[in-house]
Length: 269
Image 1 (cartoon, rainbow, N blue to C red):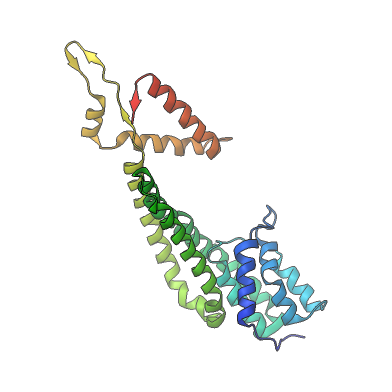
Image 2 (spheres, rainbow, N blue to C red):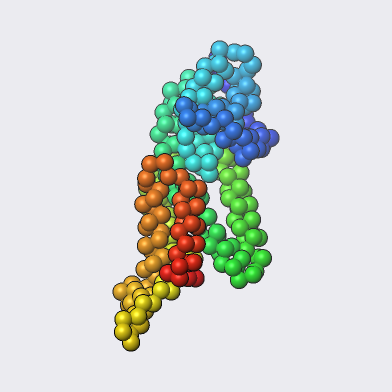
């Protein structure tokens, strides 16, 4: 059997989306990363397309369990295009499907991580955090609304990609790079804004030289406002680049240094 007469239904799309939202990363491993999760997501549909216990099903299962790694927020676009091809061509589309997955997982990983793993959490996390600091509980609902919108986006893209098929690749290809670059630049601006607004640390130490009191914080502000927060963030980035330094260790180092310097009267909020 090379082609299938089975056509995917709305129930199939709903099943794929449920498995994708709640089980796509459950089989993650260092050898094949999301390969087993990808197969798990579409396995019921593969069985409908190729039949149970058929050589074609076994061949496509081996194909889909191979190395795969992309953004969780865009993986169903690849899935939709894949299933559209397999539904039309059957097992004869195996090489094309493999090439499609390899070719698209990198670009979609870049754009998905830039927008949904960096930019969106930065923007809505900053809004929620600022509201929380001011005692406004609305921030948590802002964050929940953003996450619901992301899940709706992930749910809708599967049927869209399936409908558009391979033509979607050529349509989006010229826009992916520009969108990724724009999201990256915007993310950098947001990180800079967060450093200036959320890292509230200043020098409280003011040594006296004769009758003159040297205001170190005022001198730094004349050079560059918020210079100390920038220095702290740069030091944390430097720490994270060191061997055996994890984000958890960096957090404890920052806490310990902050407590010591605050007790000595060097820094304050």
